[in-house]
Amino acid sequence: MLLVEDEPFVAMVAQQLLEDDGFAVTHAATGSQALSCVGQDVTALDAAIVDLGLPDMRGEDLVRQLRALRDDLPVVIASGYGLAEMSATFQGMARMGFVSKPYDGRALYRALSDAGAI
Image (cartoon, rainbow, N blue to C red):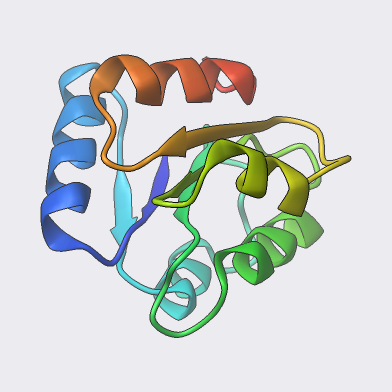
């Protein structure tokens, strides 16, 4: 599981939730770090959880780059913005889930399920 989140506390909580349920988590604080982590091989990823507000690039640009490498990659968008706004940004893209921050484990797993990751 790729977790792309620049807020340290949010990243720590999300990573702990996922690891407690047996997921191997790779954390990146920026879009550039995320792309470096996956390189050209995203086949091993169960999903990507991407914050829209990254310091070095827009979350939607990162999602498009990840999807260019693997078009069926399940993606969860995490943001402080409303769900309607997030959904509109990614309209027409399959295997997407959305979760508003701050989120709890139930909301995160619902979004992962919506994306087809679990």
